[in-house]
Image (tube, rainbow, N blue to C red; front, side):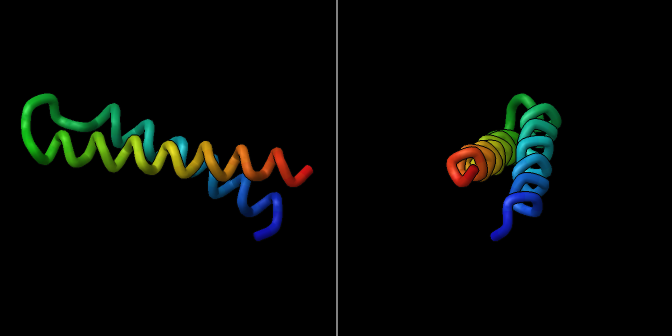
Length: 56
């Protein structure tokens, strides 16, 4: 994947992950699942940004 699309996708993942973590309900299994999904999406976004900086 080229640098610019990967960087845009990484930014979207970081924002989406943070939004999911912020919107997750406090006490329920659904809330925990949404929180975990948010963390995973955030980690993928950070990985893509890190990978992008290694390519330059």
